[in-house]
Image (cartoon, rainbow, N blue to C red):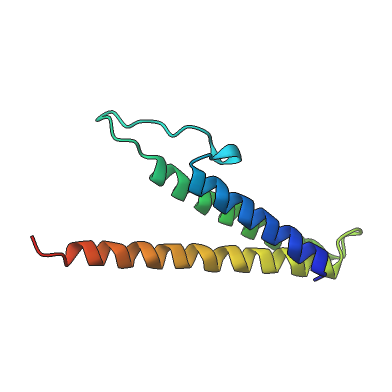
Length: 113
């Protein structure tokens, strides 16, 4: 994996992070719909979109690996390895988000009334 590719991935992560902090979702779906009871479910939509993106990344990596194994022309090992690493990093990040969410839930549940 070259330094340029790493820098490009880091730049994408930073731009997505800043978009989430400022409330701008850009390519992540725009304005969040409101549930029938008037509650804004933007967090649920953001979480679902994140899960869908991780799934898409893993599917792409799996497809490229299969194509490489079959000897499809134009699919090279560095490309496959890069996609596999992207899928691995995105899955680990999703797992950390889940862990933090569960930790926050447990903390709230243990708060005295």
